[in-house]
Length: 299
Image (tube, rainbow, N blue to C red; front, side, top):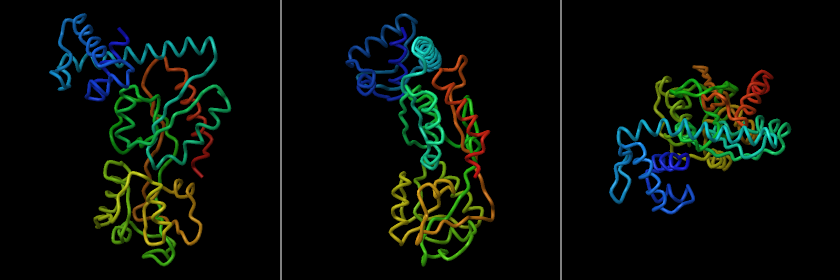
C-alpha cells in the first residue's frame, strides 16, 4: 500500500506517468497497475486519465493529502528505527532560496560535526518551489523567507534578517556613494533575479515604494551569474548583505547599503509540521535553534 501511495504522490507532482515511473524506479505499466489497484481497494477513481495524465479527481485530491501524511509517517518510522539501531545516518535533503545560500554552511558544518554519518543534498530553488518540494516529500527541510508570502502548515525557525546592498563598481552610476535610496536604485540599469524568485518581488516592491519601476537589462535565476556580470565592471545588482559579504566585494567592487526605507525580511528554516519528528529533521531543527540563539548570523 505504501508503494502505491508513493506512486500517486509522484504522479500528482510530475503530472506525467512516464516521469513518475522513472522517478519511482518502475516501468510505466507497473506504476499504472499500482494506482489502479489503489483505486480498486478504495472503490473510487483517483486519476483522470486516458493515455496521458489529466489531473486528479476530487476523491484523488483528498486521498493525495492522506497519502502524503501516511507516506511521511512511514518514512519517519523507518528512519527512527534505523536511528535506534545505527545512530543518526542517511541523507538529509534541503532546498534553499538562492539569496540564502551563504548561510547554509553555518547549519550543515556543526550538524556534520555532531552526526558524522549523515550526508547532505542541498539544492537551490525559488521560495514557491521550496514549499512545493516540502509538501511533496521531495525534501526534508528548506531555507526560505518566513514573513513575506504564505507558508502553509510548516514548522519554522527564524535565522536572520535579510537586508540589501547595491553591488556595483567604482565609476558606475551611484558607485561613489556611501549609501543610496531605493528610489535612486530604481533609476539605474540593473541585473536582477527572475520574477519567479521572491527576492525579485521584494526588490520590485521596495523600488516601487520609492516611486520608480525596475526595468532590468538582464535577468537570471543564478546569483553567481549576476555577481559575475557586476565583476565585469559595467553592471549593477541588488543582493542581500550577507550574500554580498560571502561572495566578496573587494575593490573595484562596491557594496553600498540601500536605505529609505530601511527594509529587512526574515529568513529561516522550514520543516514539516509532523509529530513525531523525523530524527534527521529533528536534529536539524535543534541546530537551527542553536544557531539562532547564538546570534552568529546577526553580525
